[in-house]
Length: 515
Image (tube, rainbow, N blue to C red; front, top):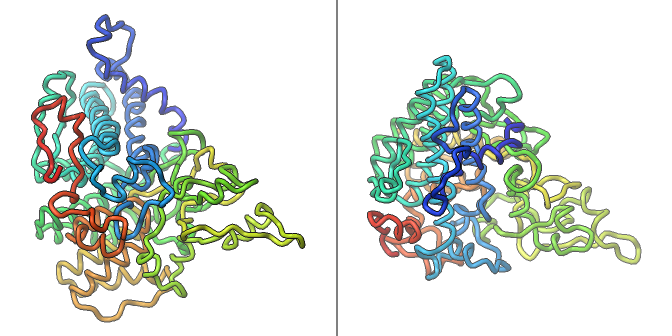
């Protein structure tokens, strides 16, 4: 799958070249559009490969995308050194975060509906092109799983959104589509994932297929969807049982394969030399290279102090310090025993002497003069020296990994009153070097799960959504994150504003409360 990343730019240009209407009225007939691109099974696979770019953009390629749903939560702040208004808006939730802000517009236009459009044309072409049915089903299953991910992100961040499930070139129709109630968007999401589960294999063979969506990946995402539906704002509690059943199939019955397991060392999860590995459930493949191919997580999290240090810079691990842990979250770990703490954070180049002794300045006796950072930084995504952060890394990221599955299963068991809930969270804790949980009530377990998921999945890109479904985003965040104190508002910041740019085009788009 990584090899496919290299060919995506040209294909993307072909498939997305559909935005110019009136001012290119002559429309040269040789131009490829989504309507005339698909002619062969190979074209279907090319279009599918473009759709796989969506999660790369969501987790890396948009400007500071790794932080969009970590900033402004209990676990992550934006660096005080950031001067970018569009980033400070979503991190601090200040008064300038409004319908004209850049990030919601990018997310709506360049990520959500750009890729939904492409996938809808691909799904329409699957129906028309002659190919073996099982091959078509696999293409459709992957495309629908990706569309489900897009709409899951969209409905969690904007609430009600237009639900477009068919290809459409009628600009008037597109520009008058109203917002669909969230409950109906979730129905479409679960339909797409149910199809994907039934039509995708438990595993793929061949190096060229590494990272493709499996039945297990779709099932794990469906479980997360069910947990979200059971929580705020829908609060459809019956879906806790639906999540429990699908996670039991995944973990206990091995319905989606026996290949999933925790890797022995937490620090190996984001080690490129250890990837792919057994913890990967839904992987985002990255290939080292320029913008759009490799991962930008390392550079976003790497220290500015190294960027400005003589002889280090981007070429030896410097970066932008965009995201740093809140002090309260940083100090919430069992620092002496939790292996996740040392694997996740560093405070100085002295923490990695084997890599930095030769790079930092020396005193008169030749001893390394290590560089301290103004706040603890996040190192779990870093690429070991030598590297070059002016390029992107090839370190894969995860939409879902097996530890997440185990924690979701424990949570679903707790919410459905099952007695074996501790079994699965204790597997995660054991890998971290911690002992089993003490006896807890159902409510105490809920409170602890907020910490355990934070420690295990820290800074991986989804914290805001956990806090939202637990119904604590507005209350918990200012208790942990001083940057939002006095700014965060109930009945407003639960969701982002519908972009004004889109509302100017589509008068049927209503605005979220508070904006």
